[in-house]
Image 1 (cartoon, rainbow, N blue to C red):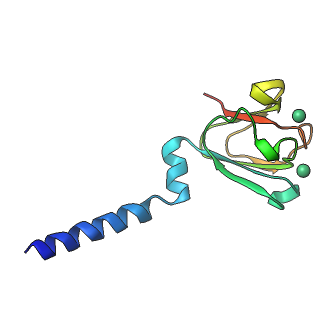
Image 2 (cartoon, helix red, strand yellow; image 1 turned 90 degrees about the vertical axis):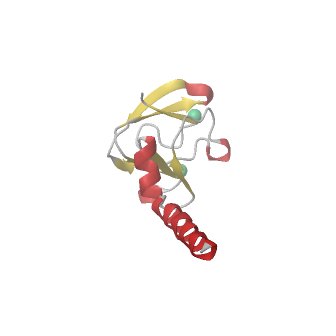
Amino acid sequence: MSNINNQTQDLYSIESVQDLDHEDAATVSGGSLDLSDLRNGKGRRLNNLTRSYATLGSFNNKATWYDVKGPRSWFAWSGKNFTGQRFLLKAGTKGNLRFSNNNIESVSPVF
Ligand SMILES: [Ca+2]
Ligand SMILES: [Ca+2]
């Protein structure tokens, strides 16, 4: 009897893990932001950002392309700590950056 119970528990755990794929996680948290350092999503990527970053570290001044998934827009800043010029990346859009190309150093969701 206890064997059967354990098996049921295990099946439940596996199912829960599978439910939490990237898309679901993004929906739950209100969306996510992907960046890449070359045009059209190519090159090095920074994927599934879901919160503010005061610096993008080694990715600073590298982003050339973006993809905003989910219902929330994002701000991208030309300086660290949300300083400098602010750019709006609208919810549901993606594409190559123009004015902020190779200039973004911090990002934050628009609340
Ligand atoms: Ca670049
Ligand atoms: Ca910059």
